[in-house]
Length: 315
Image (tube, rainbow, N blue to C red; front, top):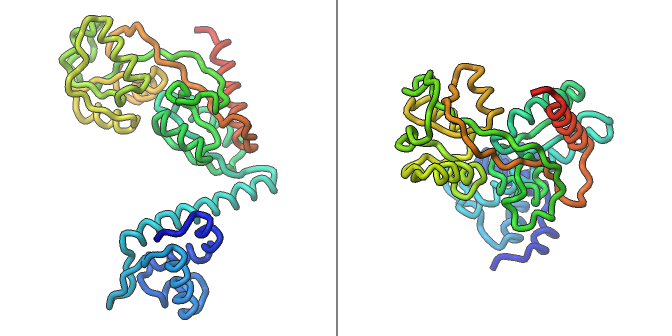
């Protein structure tokens, strides 16, 4: 029977988790014990205590040493996550104590990547010792990571949440969408293009019910066209770019800021199709009532400053 969470928390120790990682890396009690600076009898006792705490055998004993079973691999995976989190904890504490540096974890959807990159460049120029983790994903997944405390803030949309009141956010302007393709696409260089001419094309689109997908579906519906039957669905910027580069017949919709980066480097071209819809605005999102870390506050300041600059700049 699996022990309760309270029992596991009260009995499991960090050094035991480090031993599990070492056992997975070395496959030997003797070598694992050496790597965590304990005796082999001590390692044997610690492993017995871990398995007793969790109520399960975690390793298969073979002539070649110790091999984790399915439960063992599961526990080791979480042991590595906990070990990484403790390392991040120390890193962030050191930054606070020194008054600079520290750690920042930020989530971002595809359309906000250029804005984040520019703001982070300015922030890192001021804080060169800052360690940054960037997670690019869908709004729903980023909000889940925010809820779990895995992110300090996210550039995403709270409209996908069942409880948007759980977040503090500042709205950014809506951004236009553009249709892009490989420079080798048959319509590259055309002066004008209608959506009907792309109706039979193969499209790279966001997954169902995501804002950018809904926007594209609305464009087809308002034009009296059926949505493409066999699209390729992905929420990854890199995957979208790679697909378009590989197959010159594919087309996709991107936020204009993302597209401009690829076009400027000669990887993609704008197709001369004017979309009537704009993408739903994304937001700078933090957890409601949770104080931001110093690096997170600095990034929010940079993002806010950039937004003000964009609003006051001439078109």
